[in-house]
Length: 235
Image 1 (tube, rainbow, N blue to C red):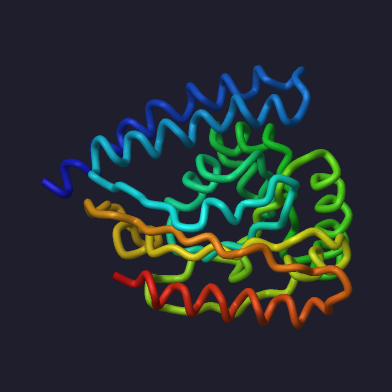
Image 2 (cartoon, rainbow, N blue to C red):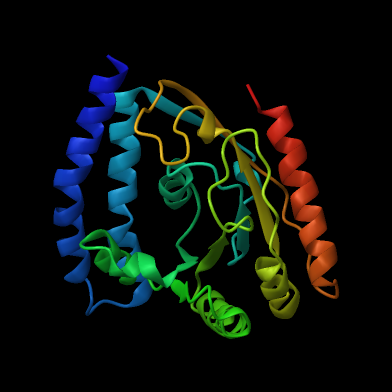
């Protein structure tokens, strides 16, 4: 039954993604925030299908910690689940991602319409300059900036190195950082076909003040909070 459910979800995703991506391209004439609100309906649909087809439910702790003003969201990266759920739970957002994702047929084309900060990972200093410049620009437009500080999906129960880019953007812009922990990887693992039924818990921490602080200090506080919180919601 698990394999059947997972296959049905994959099939529905395969059918719906080109449709939503085509609709996303048609939003090009609209302002960025309006485009995002329309395009994020894809994520809402996928989260609904995960619950209906695969039995993956979720609970969110700390919703009251989401600021009303734009912020930088630093989130644990275990699964594809959080890339969908963040769009449902947080205000309009842009992501920092590798530019190769924009080359993917349909999915990448639709993603390009969400005003992402698409960096070339091979250009270290150039990528950092782009992150700082475009990150401040997106914040000024009213978007939150979502960054996965570990850079890539880390298997459930593992810990990656927390890169400093998000903390540097926070220190230079002075906007608050919101740390996010979750345990989605135990139900839908990294690059896994099977999606196990159950409850995902996402925990949103209190905003971390960044004005007048060094990036290293901010990054260390984010890492400590996320990894400690992961232990609290492990099961």
